[in-house]
Length: 388
Image (cartoon, rainbow, N blue to C red):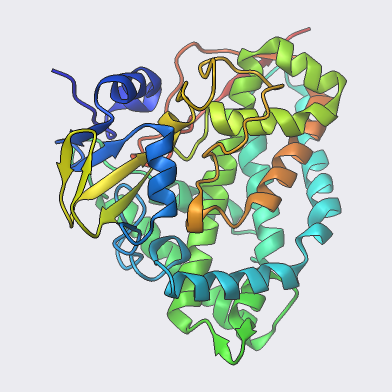
């Protein structure tokens, strides 16, 4: 009897055999463990992403939701409220002028990669990607230096869930509360002393007299820290994981860094860190012979849709020449990720500088410790060894 448990360590370690069975045999599957339906085919996921009237985000988009987020953030609202929030937040992003971050991002990458020159073996996450990610995020948001390590620890804890209880545990909720208090203190300071950073612009963004209220600024800032640390950091780790496992693709990228842009898109398809998000049905729906009821939760398995042969031929092959148009690595529909420009710029720049210092490397361990998360997938450690 087939089962799919998104809280299972086996799914964390390798979800793709499960996804294949879902796509081929159970395209609309009721997961008893998750207490929701699972959609695994690309076409069904894209349809759901574009039909917010049926597949609502307003009851939360994380597989295991955090308190008070649902209905109050960009990812957990439907139009028209979502459109209002997105317009105001995009306005803040435009004022920050993210292109002006290109030089600081490269300098952060250069400084972070430099110490690796003297190490034959290192943890890519601890020694490079997490340091780089939080420094970039801090520069964009305007967060005070010195808090990076603890904020990353709390952000990573926030996106995890307990694989036994299939819920957020006390440690996850405590991390979330810490992050809200931290964000609130920074917001209060920025209101007194505005700067050219995203938090200042969230606080003052205005369109036709409309502004984000205190709660919206707080939850937007909290969500951006969480998403920036985990989504960007997790994706960088997955990209390095792909590069380590595909030496020919890596050698091509090292020889011609311009290829990194295409390699990033293929990695977002092949091994996205954003694996599964949920929606709530607003009406009964018949799909693949199943009756899905209004009020049921639905898991949109992005990671499965990205490996759907119906959309991407030879989907289990990592091919940096593929140009996978329409991949789900950044979601889609009205909830397509707002941070795609800074994410692509950051990962490309970081890996260019990393490859200058460490051009040839391999994974040390066959088995990796995977983060226990029903929504995201990334390793907790990625030990790499230089190949001389």
